[in-house]
Image (cartoon, rainbow, N blue to C red; front, side, top):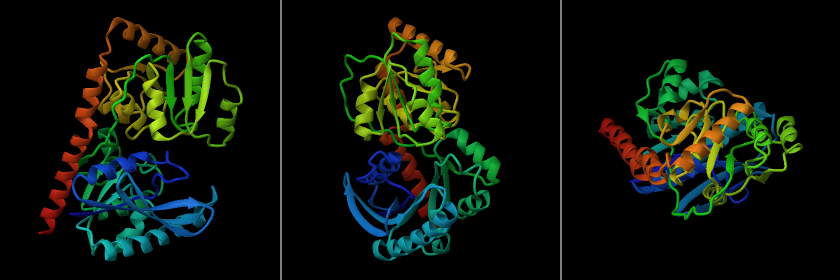
Length: 357
């Protein structure tokens, strides 16, 4: 079976940390058939790139990009995706096409849908609030419609007025690591207002005896500049690092803290669980599918004091033996491990192929 997976971004040499969850989906699909990924790289020039990542063949159009110029780059992205998808259909002749997220590449693929129908897996946190008309067009055109969490499925069905077929979680695959001699807490996420790292940093001021690690891309906004310009002494900023380094840093910490306002799934949270680490979290909705009393502490209010109290409570539970690292790990892998996600993909693909007969 040949599977063509189309995305609007993918990890590459310059940004290996970019949308790593797309790569994890591709690796799961590679257990089912021969996979080729089509994507875009936004940089400083036009070009074409072909590369192999963990055995996955990737083809990428490169286009110049300037932040804030969406009115120029959105149509440019659609044109690039249309050219790339047309070439992919002719040259690769896939049995199945899977779109990871709908926009902008879904708009480019709509005129090609008669050639090969497609499955959509929606991750984007903006799918329920931006470009609703275009989003609805791509969703309605899909023969298989899936989201990455139960919460997001319900939200999109309500917002778009279209039924989805089910949930395909982001696959969680964590290499074996010895997580001995861990200490301190860690935050992983972009330094933007949705991830709300200021709550994490300010809670560190209230817990000066603890070690805090801050991991994530500096967005260059006034918000991130305020945070990085006034870090407490007990907070180490590691910057944007590769996924492997992120996992090593989580492994070396006692717990992960998530202060997000909104998550469609919560990859960093799930990866921490896969390493046997408990999570302190503000209710960001998507992770409700797999967070519970046995693996997490919920922050009751979105304040630094509430975050600090939840961290202290998590340490009390750790010391009492309440958190079982092996059970935490087994729980998330039962839900979103590679085998579990592969089964869901096989069901979705079988359903699509059955309808085409």
